[in-house]
Image (cartoon, rainbow, N blue to C red; front, side, top):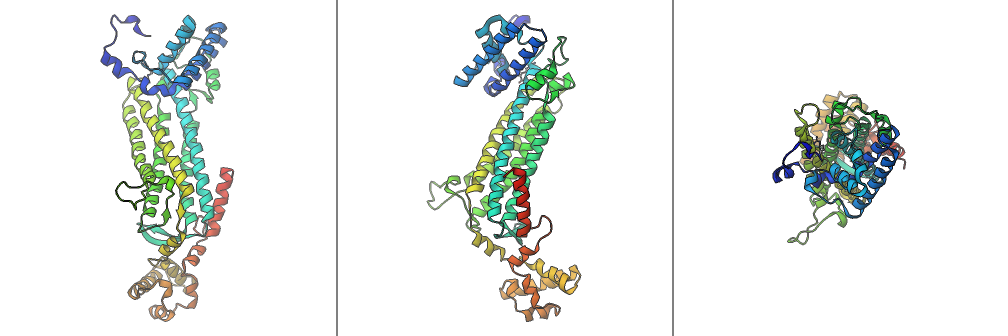
Length: 456
Ligand code: ARG
């Protein structure tokens, strides 16, 4: 397709290093859609005849049917998907196919195709994450009152509700969606018609082609259009952040499923056995979600490194933009789906969670707060008094709320019977009614907002 000025063909090695068809064939739908929009626009502008445009459109539909039915047949001497489509079109419709490439270049073509692909990847992730959010909200509603330990440093800190914990995950995913939505808005401009780098002398209508492909408008600078891969980086960065969230959730599943914790029983559908230890039930899906996050971050880093230092406008380095995006997309899709399945099917051992919440004197802060509120003790002093009470409880091997009143009054005589109203885990949780706090009423209010936002 470009052999005119060469006396000899490329070496086998040149062909090998140059060919991208093995991976960019995933762009075939986008390539055909963009070509159809381009041909239609060329005809409207009188740059090609309507007859040729019709032949091109019908031919492209036939190519699409063939690819749909039996995949893209790979031919390394045709380099990439763009040349594969055009070559097959020429076989099917003859010389009219040669007019399709008027007023465009593979540089704006690949930028357009890839944008369309990434836009769809963003939409897929947005939908899948919404399903995960729905699963989280449903389980949170079920467990708005279930007590579990809240941790800092993985040490029991204060009791919280399981619903509150699940809604924390919901918030992480809400931000992931907003990042993707934001990136999608920013990227939805069409580079088609930027041609090789400088625009074209043909009287094209870039705006019409842009709108036909669902873009908001045409890009403003032809040099930028063919060299910009921000949209792919935005996607990879959003995907990385999302994968990190999924990894952190997965890590909690793994810890919770471990016998010393036993907070959850993973469903059979999301666990595997050991070939040597018959008793084992391993959280492999969660571990792979955790593991895949590293590969998604690696894909992001790969494209960052590829783009770093490239001069305007197009350089062939940029052909390496696709594999990281495809890999991140596939891993993320699997990870979101697996996490959704785990959230939906896991059994929460609420008795066990409550018992764990009662360990570690988790209501010590409530005692300190009570001293501040009921006895007007400055918080720093209250903290010290509470520390002594915790020490005493530890010495006696009792939870804080089982210490006799006299023992507490020996530490500080301002303590009275009403302190016991705040020392149970239930009272502690119920009392945290500040906005975004763990009190069941508060968690239910956030769940209500979430359901409204999700339309459920
Ligand atoms: N396969 C190429 C890519 O993905 C298409 C653009 C080729 N442009 C060029 N000037 N060789 O980047």
